[in-house]
Image (cartoon, rainbow, N blue to C red; front, side, top):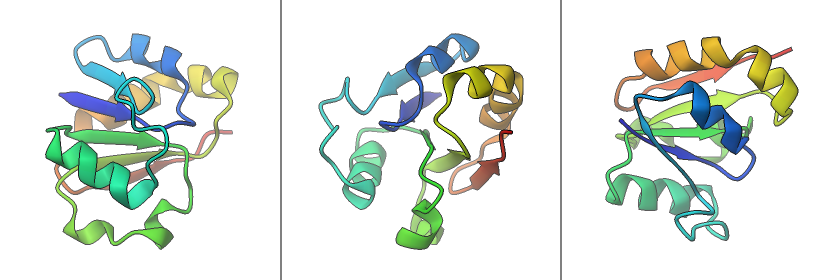
Length: 106
């Protein structure tokens, strides 16, 4: 699965997704794109999943029309995300086109 990490998603999380091609928005040259344009670009380029820490995404975008699956992490803190990495990996495996999953990380 092709996975796109948004700006706030810690890149080291990719180590916990070894069976997937993980690319960051920065690596794609998309660091200046806002959410709608970023999701459009990701879908156009064949990404299956978008991982973000933008908790407001579902309020800012109409996600119902999206083909890309979305996972929203509740923090940008790498130590906290690392502690929940297996939960994130399970959510990645369970993601389906057009789904939006929020992972609350404490």
